[in-house]
Amino acid sequence: MGTIKAGDNSLQAFDVHRIREDFPILQREIYGRPLVYLDSAASAQKPRQVLERMQEAYETYYSNVHRGVHSLSQACTEAFESGRNAAARFINAESPDQCILTKGATEAINLVAQSYGRSFLKAGDEIIISHMEHHSNIVPWQILRDQIGIEIKVVPIDGDANFLFEEYESLFTSKTKLVAITHISNAVGTVTPIKDIIRVAHAHGAKVLVDGCQAAPHAHIDVQDLKPDFYCFSGHKVYGPSGVGILYGQADLLNSMPPYQGGGEMIDLVTFEKTTYKEIPHRFEAGTPAIVEAIGLGAAIEYIEALGKDNIAAHENGILAYATERLSRIPGLNIIGRAKEKASILSFTMEEAHAHDIGTILDRRGVAVRAGHHCAQPLMQRFDLPATARASFGIYNTREEVDALADALEKVRELFS
Ligand SMILES: *Cc1c(COP(=O)(O)O)cnc(C)c1O
Image (cartoon, rainbow, N blue to C red; front, side, top):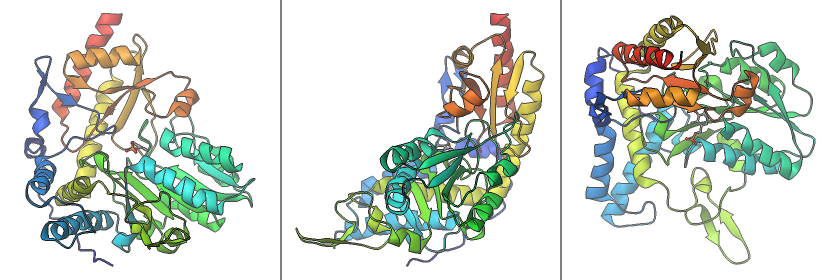
């Protein structure tokens, strides 16, 4: 087992302009205007600390991991494992061994559905998800349902996109085996009462998977306090590379689950008659992993730790409050999702224009927002909408950028009215 070291939480003043200098892409112009990047909920930009760490790996010690005795392989294995250690520290895992490196949150959820779900659930068992899940936390369960005949129940939300807790509690029966719920909604920004969600599920003897994709860049995550059975997030949403993510799980549970994929690195002994598997984390890491991406993830986590999650949350909450106020003043603009607890995501529609038209016009003014269903079509159906436009805010966004967004939206109104 590796050790978990405390992060550098030095509370330096949160200087957004200094932070922006770390992100080379923010110097870009789009159609002759400064890029205003308001799409971090889809994928965050990367600071040069991450890019340099990855380049350094390729230039000075890159090699395959785990299998080599030579110097490069040892150095690369150490750097790769330090990425895992950083992830463990980031969510306060008991041990880095409980942090499986996956391709991303999507693969993490599919792993749980296929390995845990196919072995431990049976026809007639029930699982609970919510109405605001990302497709990645819906479709793997539907695949499992079609394979083994489980039933999927859905927690409703109210008109402000609040998670309805009493309705959630009323969904449990003696057949409920698993709850799979998002920590923060990517489409409307709702922060779910995840600690209570987990507590209630455990009281009913059900396991819990938390989709932490949007929480990881914004909120403190302490899995020893929350006690989920599984918790997952993606590297590319925490200012790290794409192609890498983390599945945290309880050690006994993970070690009791069969492998998800077979191949190199996950075996103990292979004969044609029988193969035995390694313990976690390697049991679930068949094949050559995303080596340099894991190294980059470590750098991204160090970057976030240096800023401090409290500082990040304070900054982003300020931007969200400012943006909510600013956009509320635009006639014909409707904010979708006004949950009591909300993270830095602002979804909206305009009476005059379709979301895709909004996105296109904003782009001509350098403002990057997402338009569409945000991989949450059931949530769109809940609000009777085909799509919304979504601005999402990260550590590098400023109030001036919110002003640019608001000005561009005024332009949309002029063009369409
Ligand atoms: C982005 C996201 C996912 C999917 O993550 P990938 O990185 O695409 O695997 C799942 N859930 C939520 C809430 C997300 O924001």
